Length: 409
Image: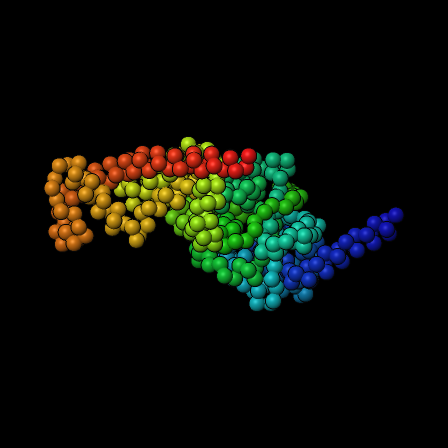
């Protein structure tokens, strides 16, 4: 019976080894002062593959002595500890130079099981999209883990979802499969040398079109063996700063970029037909979305239009696509005309007979008087446009929806 079980295990391992070779996938292990568990981790990985890249991030314990017994693996030794992010970047670059296209990473602290390697390579094998980044889900609500680790993962997952809009149960797991060849085009910050790099690579890969998802894995937290180098205050602070920056990038660059890419791909006419007129929202909701977009787009909140309109659309449960589309009435080519219209409206409200032309604004611009007129005018113009055009759009949406119902009937 034991012979049959052993044969079955060897056969399964052989299948995984073949798949790892087929996909040019190596195993990348960053390590720092984990001499208690390092040998067990290496022996487990070597049951599946000899294509191992180990990055010794300045260990000061017995790591070098242990590694001397493994001449068959690729070793990178860093003189002084730099951080996990630095070690991963170094390892990715070296693995690509060796011809690998994918890398499965796992920590050397013993929390990961090498026997889960087949989960990653099998998921890659069945996925139609080979540009995929897989993150091991430790199922931390079920596993016997430290409350601090569980809480930290929840916070990280919440903010990653805020930045990427994808639902991930575990965003801090170091057991991952990376499409390292595809990732060559990504640019990473030089200062993300610690644990925050694993958040950075996740977000930037997603923004670049990589599919990011969790796969279930086992986890072991042995307090007698495990040495964690995660610093709760400093590392969470570094991750927080990175997330804040990513939120700004998301709303000021990624959202507008994706919007215009979609419009370009579909064509303006098809976009309006499918995303605006064809939306399943009620005429009232679509009309309010148009009004919100115009209200924010014509307001004097330059530089914050996108983030404000998306935030309000979410809070008010309106159509984000329609609201965002109409907020772009203040695109750079239209800005001079919006400014002139606001200025003219402001002079009219203040009862001032001022000539408003582009030349008069450029050559004879009285800052105090003109800015006062502009702010008053922009508020009146934005509110007026939102009410008038929002009402007209309601009529159009209502008629279109009625026509659509009659056609379908």
